[in-house]
Image (cartoon, rainbow, N blue to C red):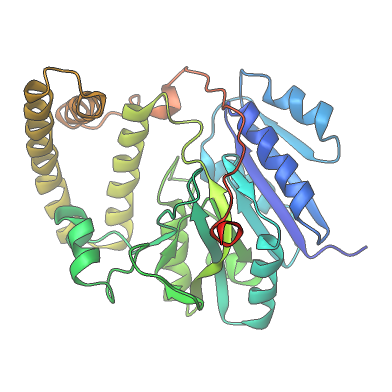
Length: 333
């Protein structure tokens, strides 16, 4: 049977999460697809699990942690199905989600990228799309912008029922049109982690393509399965990607403004976290965690943002816990 869809999952030390993801993919997806699992040198037994439990998957083994963009590109270079689903291993598919994304792309020839509504484990909404990074989003309070200017900064605060055109989708489960993808190029290999999907959507928008959030489709996204025990390193990777995005897409003046004022904002946030930790006598774990992350982040900036700091060099293997999804909102009614 001719297949229209390829599914790519990049994994790094998320064996249990990956297993749950693959089980939900095969259980809840009715259209035929080719599955590619790219493993970034996991040490938690992920490759053996895939070989044993999902022999139909095409397993690609990297000798080192290449990150998200280069690992996906290894597959994208060699596949030509009309549509590709880029899926995180910390997702749980709900019946109809894949088919819904595929149907929308088929019916909308100017749409290049779609993504569903992501849910937390308890069924509450996550932000599933975002604005492109700008001076406003990075130096002002993004939550305040979303509350005061929802038309310009849409978010999960609003309830949408129809497809919503957005600047960028969050890449946990995004479906791409190959025609558009190949026109603007694959993921930028300069991004190790984070904002690679924003960079891609930015290029697609410039080329005249459209990106959509589909609120009536849902999947569970547990959020950063391979990063939860390396939060400081993951935050460093986000800032590294942020600076690359500005340097590449926003011009030199916004880039310089960001590099000057972003560390100052981090320093002020560190002071607030330290005060919160002191006032709670160190008993509030949230304040303590934020303080440690911001100390590490400020250290990275003061050292000149070295390449050797970040999640790429983090040796900690992360083994995800099993997941039983909460009822969806529709099931609760």
